[in-house]
Image (cartoon, rainbow, N blue to C red; front, side, top):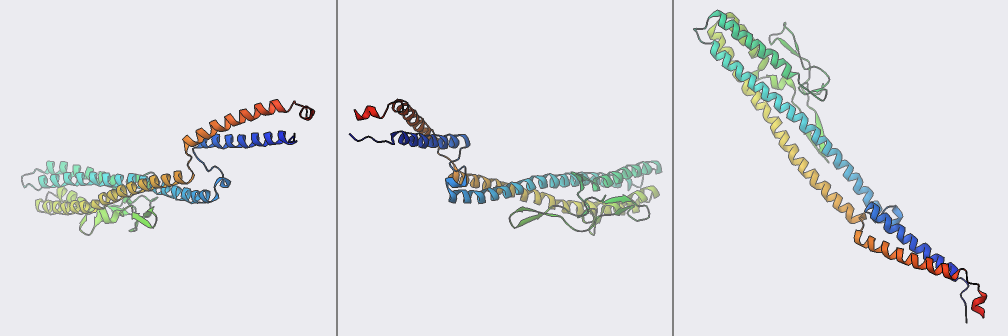
Length: 297
């Protein structure tokens, strides 16, 4: 009878292999991945690194889009308030142009328009997350300050440039309009028209009041036209966000196909490895105490 002198080593090797299988299955169940280190599948691991890099980029684009939505919505909301205030100024100017208005009533109306003028200055200096949104690219500079030496009564401190942010690979979006384009447009000067209306009301000249009211109406129309930019940009960002979210879903699906574990298979492998391991340990416990001479008798 031939005796395998390495029977213990064979059992030990079997135990080591089953424990490795058990470890692999346990790790797959814990992480949900079949590739937990490059050596598990070098090709898949390399492709997954690239996939992760793209996902990180998409996450950054999504973050940019979310931030820009807040900025543009703030701009749109601000211009909505501007439009409402200018509508009120037009109504006051129309009322003041009535030839039967008394001087005291005209002065009271002038004070109301001055209140609108102050409100307009605050709106033109609106900020979002610490940055002024109507200062062009000079976002740390207060766009408008009072300057009585100028006809408009205010001074623009920003510039005429626009900010752009990348929202997808090779795709950027303009995120602001400079204040001079909105409040001092060639088609209508908000501050200039309000100042003219105040002066006309204080003078009591109904003709001048009517002319100034027309100027405020022109400014109102100009602001309404500029406001379209914000609505269009918000729609563009919404569409872009939907596209990015779908791309992220696709990338996650691709990642799962590359390195994801089959959980049912991993559970089965773990159960089988545990059973085999227990059997091998039981066999080893029986044979190790047996003296080799027992086989030679």
